[in-house]
Length: 338
Image (cartoon, rainbow, N blue to C red; front, side, top):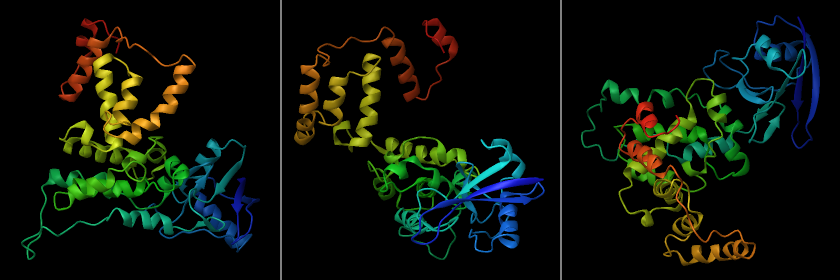
């Protein structure tokens, strides 16, 4: 079968350009097979990373038809079916990382952010160094998903949060962080949760775009792992809302207001989250210009009316907080739609 590979090429300190290669190849082979054929028979200067060719090492991560993927995992036939251009496959380097040459990117930032979460089990609290620290099968099972990560960079290349906020540590690092939070052998859980509980670089910087889950080639589901860290932060937080960091206060105040009124009272929301209930003078002052503009234009709500279904919404939220099932039958009895 004759196909076309349209490859985005770029040399050091040079502008990127697209080059189209035409080749005769078995469509049951992989994208990596096609790249190797081009390199061996058409252009030996084409650069890409490869190693195991079996979805183990993660070296061949790149952007294929607009999404992050492993070239050794994606078949030519499947990519032709997904391509917007008939009989052509577009291949580019991973996103969010500087290009060294063609499909090879500089992974330095990727590794530095992984290092920032301290991705190793702490042994500081161990008192019996001559013994192994064993885990039960159920404890070990909690580590399975994040332990499958091969650090290919697919999630990082597809991450919208990294694209708009370079300080965000990335889904790969937080997936590894979730493993350590769940690991019963680790002695630094509280310190880790403090570190990950930051507004922009930690878990709260995630935009929940779901891209990382979609592109992960080995089913780690980084967004789910980030959510697990958030739940650990929330579960640990026993102090009053006003003593919490703003990201955590944002989430809890939102839930409280929905529970109280059925929807969000915007007046209270700003004051309780940004102004911390008048405890943060700077935060309160930052709201004044916005409040004044809304008031001048007649858009500032002077009253707040609870929603008609506030009682049912409160019941649902309360049931979820208590981890009690709120069945469709119960909802139907109260006139709610599920």
